[in-house]
Amino acid sequence: MVNPPIFNQMAASERPKDECGVFGLFKHPEAATITYFGLYALQHRGQESAGISVNRGVNDKIFSHKGMGLVPEIFNMDDLDRIEGGSAIGHVRYSTTGDSVITNAQPFVVNHRHRSYAVAHNGNLVNAHLLKEELEEQGSIFQTTMDSEIFLHLFIKNLIKGDIESAILQSVSKIEGAYSMVLLTCKGEIIGIKDPNGFRPLALGKLNGHYVLASETCAFDLVQAEFIRELDPGEIVIIDDEGIKSIKHPKAAKHKSLCIFEYIYFARPDSTIDGKNVYEMRKAHGKRLAQEAPVGADLVMPFPDSGNYAAIGYAEESGIPFEMGMIRNHYVGRSFIQPTQSMRDFAVRVKLNPVRELIKGKEIIIIEDSIIRGTTAKTRVKSLRELGVKKIHMRVSCPPHRFPCYYGIDFSSKGELIAAQKSVKELADYLGLDSLHYLSIEGMMEASGVKNPEHNFCKACFNGDYPVPFDPNFTKQCMG
Image 1 (cartoon, helix red, strand yellow):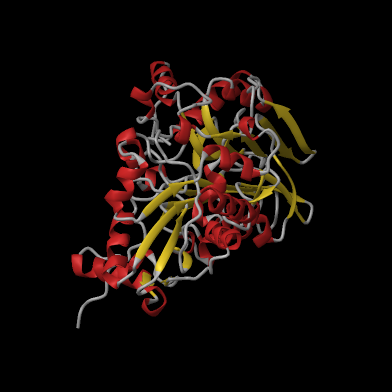
Image 2 (cartoon, one colour):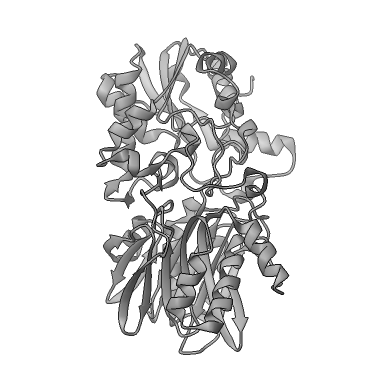
């Protein structure tokens, strides 16, 4: 018997990583449990570690529980009961640059003058190396390799001189880059902070009269919270017993620069960001792709779950049937990955398997949401050829990634990006495709349906136009 071709899910190094997710809930009797479910909904944004920090009363210590792995692997009911009550913040992490170790799991907590503070951060500070050097010269001692810790050091230093509001404003005036943060104080206050460019999403909701913050609205749906609005770029909200207060970042950006990759890849399709549903946006990109790059074929298919919704849009616009030519096993966990090669081979086969009768002898169009390094795409195409697929066309629902990201996505050098090294024709030949086409930047912008899209999105990974200046020689060493 011939072993079936191996169709692996993108290896850890092959796909852009899912950044981080944050959640915060102000003074709720089941704060820890609800935060747990909020993190469960945000699990797609980070699978390396997770944590919850809770403050039970005024001037009380902050209790935390965190660990490496997925949310349900880290918490059980005993853990949640132990830290239940009060206000809570939570975090799921993928390390964009800092080490993947328990020390760097968030929320990060500091104790100063018998008071505790915790922070959970999504994004990347591009001037972290400069701030760290400055703080160390002033006597600060760092416990982690996270830029989140840098913010807390700044906050504590400024808090000594004044109140919380002024400490926050002085601290954010020094940091640069992409950040959405939730901060928990010793008094149980919850503070949400969004950078002036609005790179990363952060939304405000309400659950039975209690304010809640989350990276994505899908977390509100799970805990049955009412979505109120998204924080504006540069907005800081302070939630305490008197209600909610909104203040503005001291350095206003000229234009909003929401990461367009949130719509293309990172966010869950059932989330709404900046007033636009992610599912509908991906479909719109697929429809525009069909207009820009039509080709005859028997069927349109994605590699689950990459490109699923863009593929639906492409099929609708082209009139070519949408089919699931590959079936993904959703019941394979991280523990299934084994150290031996034979077990690794079996693990990737069990995750994704072809419907042979559907695709053998056919001309197919594969819709992908991105091609970063190309290695896995090449393996997949080779395996399809071995199955007897007649022609393989690939359409990608975003422009080519030709420039590194320094704002919280893990491709931080140009050499990692295959589209920066090869032309589209060369890449098609390398992957073994009959044709390859990417969605144009203009098409992506028009399909977004957003007013003045040129001023709404960061597209630096496509066009090299970086909204926030940085030093590329040091940015990769920023902690993340």
